[in-house]
Every structure is written in C-alpha cells, then in structure tokens.
Length: 369
Image (tube, rainbow, N blue to C red; front, side, top):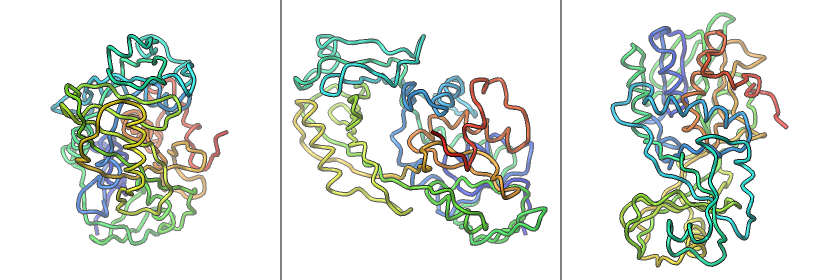
C-alpha cells in the first residue's frame, strides 16, 4: 500500500498547482483517472489572463493576485507563461458602459476607443459597433507550459503523479483515509478533491454529500478567413458576452459562442449547432469571409450552484478538502488559488500575496449571494 500525507484526486491545473505548492514539505501524490493529466478541461482551454473577467468578485481578487506569479513564471517554467494579447469589448447594441471593469484602476483600467480608433485596430467590423473598451493587460496563458511546469514541480520535489488511477472508494477511519484506486490502495491523511466535473462523484465515493456541481460544455472553432495579418489580433468580445474571437494564425481565428450547455461529466465533443452558432455570430460581427472550418473542439467548465469557486475542508468530514467549481477562471486564478489551498491544508495564516483574499468567500458549502 502506498502512503502519503496528501492525496490529490485529479491531475488538471487545479490538482497540479496544489501539488506544486505542497510537494517537498509534505508527501504528495496525484492520481488521475485518464492516461494523461488535464484531458477534459485544462488541455482544451483557450485560456486568457483578463483583469475584468468575473466582475467585482472574490474570483477576480484571486486572478489579480495571480498576475505577478504568472509574470515570474511560477512554478519555474522555462518559457514565459503570458503572451500579450489585449482585449476589445465592443460597445453598441449592448450598451456603452463596461460595468465589469468599473472597479479596476491603474494598469488594469480599460481605455475607451472611438469607432475610428476601433477601425484602425480591427478593420471590417460591422456598422452596429459604436466603439469599444480596450484592456491592454489581457494576455494569452501558455496553458501547456503552465500545466507541465506544475506537474514537473511535483515530481522534482519528490511527489508522485499516477495516471490510469481511477478512484474506486475512500473510507475514513477517524485518523486517515484508506483509498482504493485502479492502480492500487493508498493511505493518506488528507484527500483533496480536484476532480473538476467529477467532483461530486468523487465526494460520493468518499461518503461525502456532493455540493451540486454542474458541468457545462464550451465550444471553440478555428476558422480560416479571407483576411491576413491576424496572428496577434486582440481578444474581441461584446458586452452581452455572446461571442469572442481572437487571432490564431495569419489568416485564422478562434471563435467561441460562449455556450454553457449543462452536460453529464464525459469526454465532451462539439455539437454542430454550437459550431453553426459560433460562425453565425462571427459573421454578424465582422465582414471577413469564412473560407473553412479548420478545427473544432469542446471542453468542460464546472460550476457550483452559486457559481463561486469552492476551496476548503468539508465542515462535516475531517480530512476531505474541496477544490472545485472553477468555472471559466480556473487557469487564470490557479497560482493564487493553489497558494490559498496550500495554506488551508497546512493550517497556516494566508500569506501576504493573498492580502486581498478571504478564505471564507470560498467555503465549500456556503451559498454566496
């Protein structure tokens, strides 16, 4: 039987980043049901770091706290983790006021663009757009590099990452968890549930009631279009949040209809209707001929009933730690969220980097108004 101090169920960015924080000081093991870590959400995410995302919420405070950690390439990435992109929030049919950014200041405060300025930045936009708000701080997150750096840090510090190791059962004896997996039995003092869409299922296997997690499908389509010079095109969306697109190659873009379709946890695939909606919204937004669909895929995003992230020990089950409900902000908040989770698991005061964060905001069974 393997023995460890902390067993993390789920090898996506949530579990990998917590493991990177804890390994070295504690014996850490990550178990992943799939043959690779991060297959369903992390590995299919078109992730951005965007200051305005989430509005004035505790999640945005985690995001802002994460920015310096990304800038320093935590936890030891060999390549930069952020690539400058910029974000354009189109105004017009959905109004002129960018309420989600009203609390942002300094380098994160968006700048107003007139229609003429917008045309210089993005030629071909349809006539309904009156202008935009521009976030210069928005950046692509190099997801694979970040995820690999976290898993590498776990292994480098003596932790273990096991794939093809699905959780079968977990029993608490009052002192420790006795766990059965498809890769063998494990004993641990702390069981961390970082299983994403499968979070409630993992809880039930451990005899812990679920918290009502819902997995939702998100679709992305790569289009080849009749326009050149698009590789560094900003992230473009509307204030109604009905679509986004961004440059990918010289004449290709990624387009998302910002769908949130509830699904059972699974290896999700794109639906043709969502692909068609993405193309339609793109064509209604900008006059660039669509020449071909080059790629299409879908991933899972998981939400608690109040859409708040849930981090902390279960109030009714010793040794069971929740790290779930990251929704669409899991990657851009992971540096700070993992620091929060590591402090809670160790029973320590939150570090100075989290001065703006309250652990109570993320209590697993709380319902945020």
